Amino acid sequence: MLNTISVTAATQNCHEANGCIEGVKSHSRTVVPLNKVSSVERASETLFRAFAKSTANDYLLKKFSRIPLNENVSRTRFNAMIYYYTSWFHDLGGEVVEANDYDAVGIWSLPGRHLPATLSEDPKFNKTFFEDLDKRKYEVIPPGMGYYYLFMVGKDPSQPKVRGSVKTMLNHYKERADKDNCAIVLEAISEHARSVYEYFGFKVYLTFKYGESEVNTQGVLDLNGEGFTGYLMLYHKDAQNVFRNC
Image (cartoon, rainbow, N blue to C red; front, side):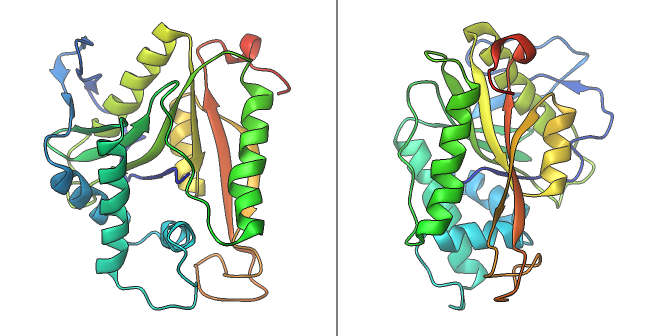
């Protein structure tokens, strides 16, 4: 469904290394703890701040919530949608985790326990964001291999001096995927997101457009607009030998 990232310092050099969750150990002079959230409210508030200026995320939230693009939506209502999805994953078996006292929050689903897609009312969008991405995903991942899915991750922009939070999260799930011989799947919805994930070893397996002939690159309604560019990105510890049709 929705998979995005909003971080401002994830690619900066820092000394913080992997955090801990469910017995996974860190090996670093400075430990950045990774925990399952104890407060969905606090987790949601981090994501509110992280995506407050993301017009691509706003577009997707409208699509998933079946709200016309020309309908005025307040930031409060966008936040309510984020709160809903955070709660949905938390309630139905996903993992909502935080690092550095809610400096970063991530929403994940686990191998064999993925939540159903929330289709929009737009067949063209559904084909692009669900059918085409699923088809390509299963072309690449070998039959029988499970995968972790990153629905959303956000870094609190009000704490620019706090570093290592997103690094902790991504490295933790990479370690789990390596141990389980699983892949990790996500969709980056911006160039910045793509570059961050590439830094952490993810590769692009499909580039796609969404919002064409609906909005421009800033999310403003435009029947001639080029919309946004997204990237289906995957990770596996031995991708060059395991993934197919690359």
